Image (tube, rainbow, N blue to C red):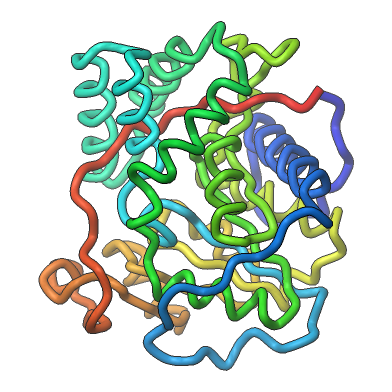
Length: 315
């Protein structure tokens, strides 16, 4: 893929693969959104936030909002739910599903991603979709959303996203999940679009290779930076929302960072920098990480998943 030349000067280092993954995600996300603009009716909000935010500013179209997906917008991991759908459709065997679940559980418990472990997870996932058509995975993704994801959207986070939409601003998902899956979720929620991990495809068929690396950590910040440059956003006026300390690079990029259902490391970092915190989990779960819970919002879904990349490259 040719370099897009979108990136503004950065204050920290980023690997070439992170930059490539970020640019690819921004390019794929823009392509999907441009194709859908003018033909998509935005859905109405479901549920309300625990309190009305004093941000966004109505009419500020140079501001946008960027939402992490797993455990921020949706309870649990999107890739795990997609894996359940693929297993149900006999894409792979039970032992592979168990392996994916164990890999994601390890990531969550360890709190850090071992490069060799992540490489193993990526290769396992890519081997499953290699040779399958992108259109086939998109069709399955639509069904999986209805089967496993629709009832796991956090009403509080959904209401925050709707507030940005109502203010006339773009709202993007930014996730390590497949760009195809993320795009489906964004469209179903009436959001602007999605930035996700991009996997290479040739003539509409997955090759089993990634473009860059999974959209994770610093790569998410690169994707947001690239999209902001392309769309003319002022990052100081933008907002970002996430549950994970791995997304601190993305959260630090904007003027309005929010920690949503935060893990312990993100909670500590957010409190140190006086970032806003919101928690939509039940009291029991929130108590484990030391944050008061917002009453009346659904429980955190059990089960975790492998960090799997199965995205297409824009041709």
